[in-house]
Length: 157
Image (cartoon, rainbow, N blue to C red; front, side, top):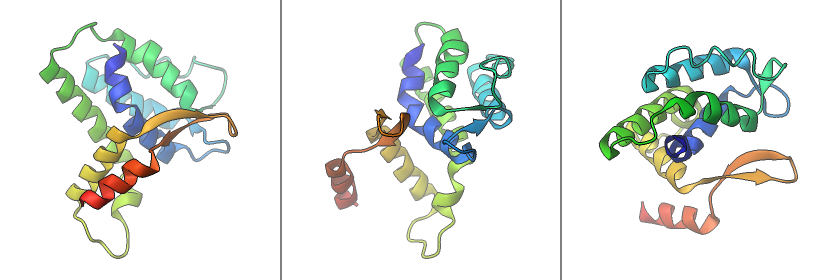
């Protein structure tokens, strides 16, 4: 079931990006195992993280490699159809895990204008409106949002 991952992919990217401390935007498999185990717990897929060690013969993964692993080893285990309400609940839980991992730089700032709850809501809006694209210059996947959309969202506030 790829739809769930497709709808939370930007949130997953933010969590991955926060964990990616290695050169070239790579994250250590040990950190990704914890994130993947959290996803597996939400999706009721025990041991979802166990295959990461055997996936590729490196200690780190790029987001593209991690996304491939999630699609083929974790999210592929989901049933073909989920009821809409159940899918929304799963997506919200997955986003919450990603938010817990990557929220620190968003909420720890000097002149706070918004509460943590409001910042999370803004983050979710930007995740919903952004897209994961391939950057040919760096040969990596990045999350982008059209400048006009950012302007419209900001003007709405």
